[in-house]
Image 1 (cartoon, rainbow, N blue to C red):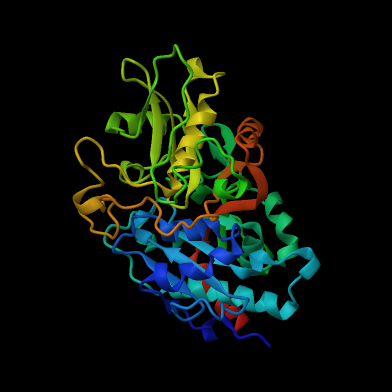
Image 2: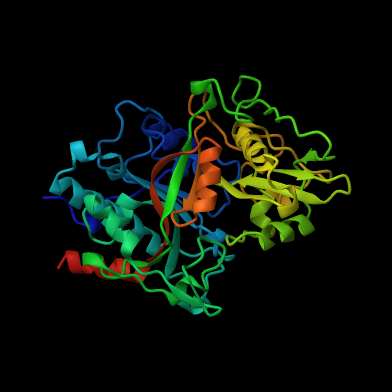
Length: 414
């Protein structure tokens, strides 16, 4: 019989890059979101790495499945606050997990969330409703198998999540909740379901996780490879002649306003300043194309202004920015990172980008790229395939009701 959630110990990893991160690469690409978030150059003072196994600098022996791990930073609310990985995501139909393993994996997930519910909120927390006391937690890029467990379903029932209604009346149209950036829309949508009660308060539409093979493994990948050494400065692809365009890695506040105006996933300046970003400017200095890498390493906000489309610029910008995965942080002309010491709004934080790597510890052969594209966004899916992306799995942005977690644990342990 598997242990109940409250019987499963949760361990804090104070130095996750040395005690948690080494356990993940053998399972790539599945734990990509958590791996890249741990490698990302900025960790705020409020961030925590949690796992169901003890901190260890040795990868031998590896954690015994099932196991789970999570990176948490509630100071980033209302943007994505946590990234989660469960080894149950690795199971294939040919090697389906046993009922006991499924129960244990779900108990581990609930135990992690129960632990989070007991933690104090950072002073900078900006949840939708201050009176809620941080009740809702935003999980990013949640694998469909993990979401199924959170809902109280079996992993092989993951496709049921695609049928959960996420429509919310916004502006007279039917739209799903935003992926991140604002909680106000998602709160209009309740998605309970299954035996999990309302552990899952809401979810976004389904996203296809597209994977980009490490360029060192294929010997290919325009703009994906630098000087042959991970951590080197990525080379940029040549631009079409006659357009008068120039590459830029420097973005101003007005640039960020433009970026937000062109996306349904608005990120704040404090986040955009931290991200690896690449753009194209016209001779007049106008920003005409851009893309960023999210804190979890995924391709984000790829855009080309309408009058510059049809020239292959999107592919070049996307390839160039993904080449920055192993590149070094370059400060803008003012030498600014984010706020005081790179933390934003006076926060401190580790790895503020002063000459460091955007993503620490990316080894040769592990430079997987990834992108999340809504299932029903046929145009963007076509563009992503054109960039060389291969379909991996389905993922979601998920809003967890921490009060619902407590209620579910109580129900299971009666």
